[in-house]
Length: 183
Ligand SMILES: [Zn+2]
Ligand SMILES: [Zn+2]
Image: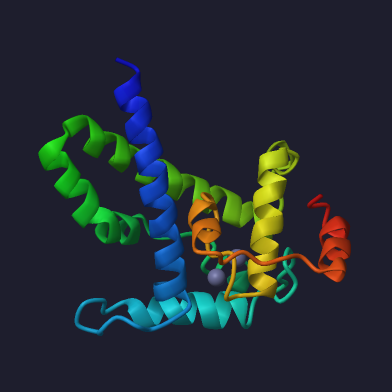
């Protein structure tokens, strides 16, 4: 039956979207979890909020420092697998298909995050950057860099919309995004 895998794909999208929102908001922009539960939390926060946002990429798609250019563009696969593990391991107990689809989509999401986040800040792949969906996500992430308390989703924007955490572009933002060839 095609309905069951399709339903698990939709459920997995929702789970991943909220996971992406929560990881980015609470681990990468804040230090809220007790250190014993998340020893690498400080490193993740420093790496993303302090360095990626605050030092590098003040200009959205240009960073002259060779180290800073690629710093924190990629997520660690283990972070995603561990943070999502209570969900996909529990799901495996009840539905092997559901757990397998969720786990596959977590890995696919991880690859997409790394691919598009790197392209947004270090544009080199014209085959990717001309896609309308890519441009839409790039504009979305541009606004996250401009308004860091908004637009926490990178790949799956559903959760930001549900919790009303979406930045509204101002006229000057629209001009800048046009200059960056994101429209
Ligand atoms: Zn970024
Ligand atoms: Zn961020």
